[in-house]
Amino acid sequence: MTKKKNGAAMPHIRMIDSEADVLTELTLQQQRDSVRFYELLLDEIDRAAICERTRIPPDVVTMGSNVTFIDEKSGAERTVRLVYPAEADISAGRMSILTPIGAGLIGLSVGQSINWPDRGGIEHRLTIVAVEQPA
Image 1 (cartoon, one colour):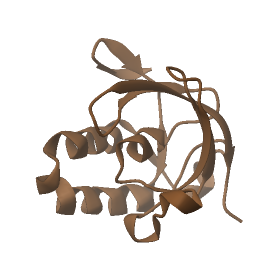
Image 2 (cartoon, rainbow, N blue to C red):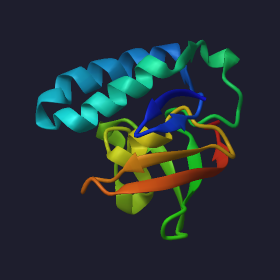
Image 3 (cartoon, rainbow, N blue to C red):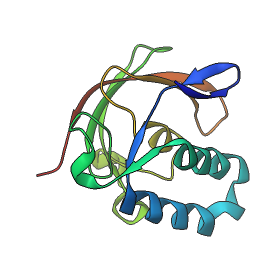
Image 4 (cartoon, rainbow, N blue to C red):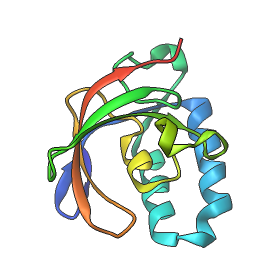
């Protein structure tokens, strides 16, 4: 566990070095639109252990991963592919990293949970059930 958010310890996360660079740039470009959300994403990048792709375990959510998670509040289970904004199409199951839930998923591994706000600011506890890496 690492930094605390609202008094709760945040789980340790990992990110691929090149993805952290792209995410930082995307976040800084978009920051003026929604300061609070982008601050959360920048905080995630800041607290992540940044690694080369070859050092990331296969059960860690990275860009392009298919990730199944449960919203502990509603019990809903959902599977999405985490993508960059240009590829996003939620009706096709492709969730942008620049959405609140997408930003909350990056770097987590199977079994980890995080408390994370939705677009309306309501906090949800998301638990990772499965991760499938792209071929």
